[in-house]
Length: 172
Image (cartoon, rainbow, N blue to C red; front, side):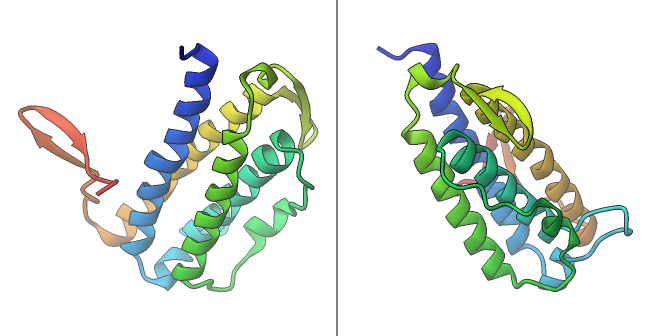
């Protein structure tokens, strides 16, 4: 029998792997390397910076914080990068990070969800860490989509409307 805790873990994995990942990949595929590293101003991040930031955050909070692997994150470097890292390399980093995150989440026992964790100086629980990463990915995926639309000037076609119902296309 599936419990609410089982469903929380399953849905969190699905959001990261089946929702945010393909949308970010579609954005990266629609852009040149220069567009990926374009920033509207010095107070804003490029899509490349956001991908590095998402990967650093997910590794720190899930792989290290939840999974108890060593925390090797150097957060400020995610934002300080200015050199153009090619799209294929960014995609590989995103893929390898989300694979590690998904593997870590697959090992979480529902009995561990309320266990305390100290991550990035914050007192939280395993469930809180998972929730944080899913929310964080959602927010920055939206920024990546907005920046992609600003650079390309086109709709990314994430949904196809059929009989008045919007059906996602990003997993295709």
